[in-house]
Image 1 (cartoon, one colour):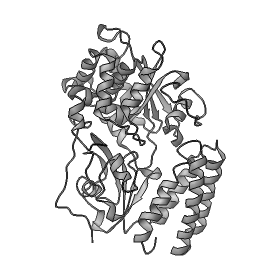
Image 2 (cartoon, one colour):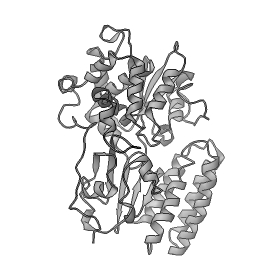
Image 3 (cartoon, helix red, strand yellow):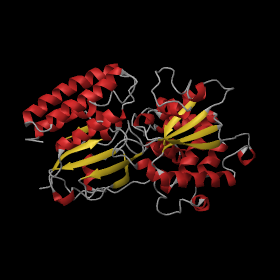
Image 4 (cartoon, rainbow, N blue to C red):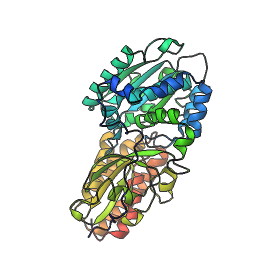
Length: 424
């Protein structure tokens, strides 16, 4: 039977998505009539140092996966050379398996993203912005292009915006589907027209980013939080969520769940509440056996860990990672062997091949597991132990996060899932 308790269900707490479904994403007039661009107007009359302080005080952390403090990154970009060209780059290359929340923002609330980029540009002193978007997001591209045109016609983008000295323009750059280009430095290489290979850091983008100029790179969801923070204040935002993880989080529910989709919940709710509440519980009322949090580069949780609270620090205390917000649910009807096969195939396919540990390691892992899938339960576990050691070696010697990622699903599967499984 299903182990989830449906009596104490939570509901969404919408801040980013509060207008989703209520206005036409193709109409800037409806967005403005609903309070859109008011936060930008407020920011336009605020000193950059004050904007930086508000973002810092809000405690907002990057929603792309790493959870790096947004205020620190924004301040670092602002502190770079004053008299130089600066950029704001939106990372819309949403490539993590099981993740589709940025697409929801772009297709439902494109002007919210533009407004967030404008506020970020004011804070750091940037005059040019780029949206790096994956090429498969055809509808998102169409809607964003329309939004950029409308924002330009209405005077929110362009030169001397609203008769001030602030000028800012946005261009879109269509990616070619590389998972690796979701990493900010690799994204910048691609944006410059080069092959999508990772850069060695430091220097970081805040000092030498796009074309070696100071660059603020943020995820779609991160930027979409800025209008709320500026409009209602850092303290109001900080009152949501937890001490270490303020605000809300968009989560992507998929797998063996009754109501898959994108939901916005307050940080601090438990995994159990998310799955049983907005998710509606396990499909076909079957037994839950595992949850993969964060996509292919995420961590497996067993049913006993569903009391863990959603948050960066909170999940780490359970040896779990929040990542991009993907929550993939597996019931007793799932085949976890196939799931691991998909993960290892994905890493092998997406490795750029620049560094030897990742290029050889991802292939070796894939081949070892391909030989093990038809073997006994014990032999599969022994193979996973070997793969774990290879993944450790990759993690300490690879250039970018892709080579450092396989250890996360492998080790968490061994530590959290295997002790609770009789076979897979």
